Length: 152
Image (tube, rainbow, N blue to C red; front, side):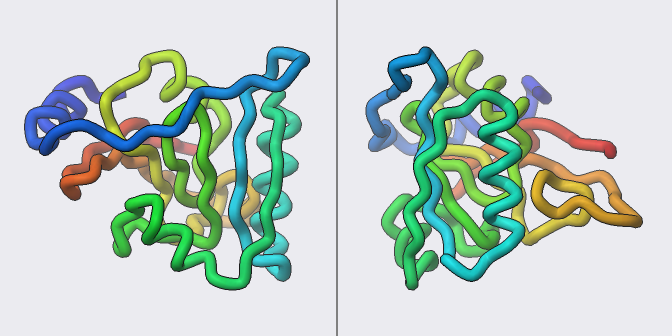
């Protein structure tokens, strides 16, 4: 993680965060709850990516994913096709499982992580011509910074 950018992100934060309770399943796997459209194939592939990484995943198919994003404080410009909650954080889009684990281990005071759009090469969006993309940390005040740079 780029510590300088994260420090700037945290310096601009306005107050506390409404976080969720951290949860683990009975087998010790971190519990993650995914909100997605029932018709989205790449969302299902991302769920498989999380399960393969050892997360205990519950999926809730919703007709209005945008309303979920709004209620969880995801900035509009960071939006993607699915949203999740894990360990007190919001995860927006095709964030790699390793970055989610890093977030949970480091426990920075941010609202969550996002991979805006649907970049080719991100988990669930595998394919030819994959390129680098950024995983962004964001807070409730709209501040953001690069949490990780991913190069396929």
